[in-house]
Image (cartoon, rainbow, N blue to C red; front, top):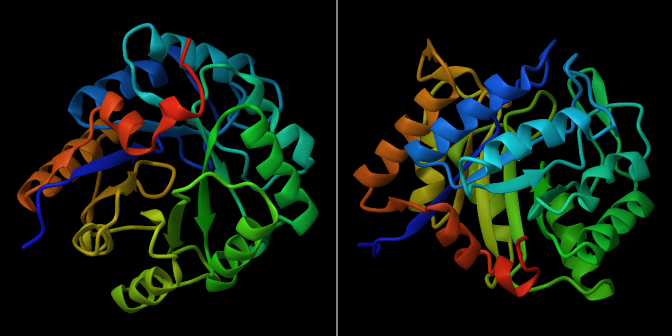
Length: 273
């Protein structure tokens, strides 16, 4: 039987197709989610109109309001399908509140869209993330991405342990099945940490299987699915509470923000202001 572990619940609260953002309302929901068990929040840089941007105005308003009431770990996304170049996508890395950032190690079809991450952009993003003293969380949609990261760790000075996130369920990518999760997990280096994101989720099977297989991190929230099981969720807090309950039922505990920093060794990278 697995020993009790601290599991990082990462909240991604903003739907990809959002048409507007209320910074104060979003901040209040994040704070409540942190109280319910979320130790990290994953945020794209968006304007009040809900569109991706390199302007940090709305992003900073949300984060400052959150940090005034919570010590939740802030993760910035450097991804998302948009017309921005990699320099624009890396804009949030200069913001001192950001402790971790998503890293996308390759291109992939997402339904009718193409998520473009050519190799030169990937290398640029890696260097910028580390230059700012931030930990990358590497989002892998396909097996080839895991292989490319293994190659990159030989070329660039990645800090160990490397943190992967297995992303399943997007249209035209790796399906969200236990069999595919097992296959993806088998290619992650044994000395690495890993987590799970299930896009389009309408049950908790994949998330539960990932925790049982040793995942250190589980991502939940409206960015990936607005469902609590088969029913629409009232809000992100509902999803965090459900995931925290599942984690406890499996004999583990949600990691508090300071425990997240210890698990990911964030204090070894930078001192939080």
